[in-house]
Image 1 (cartoon, one colour):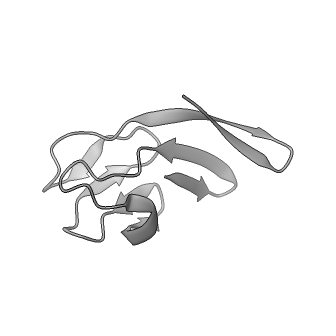
Image 2 (tube, one colour; image 1 turned 180 degrees about the horizontal axis):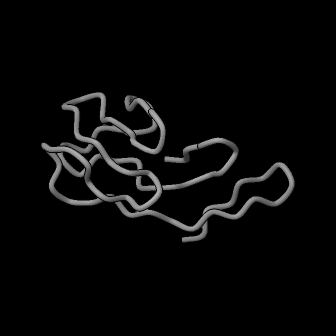
Length: 75
């Protein structure tokens, strides 16, 4: 999942670690927190850390580089 927060881009795994739902398609982003649309787990998109249950495992966060109009995720 790629998040744009005030013009700065962040990337994490797309699958919620609780039930595998897509954070990019079903989640809602508010500030730096994405809330999973399936069961309400929350993650910090900057660090990937769990903010709220039912997830107990963090999502992986990735370094992002912007080149012109391209957003590159460094894996």
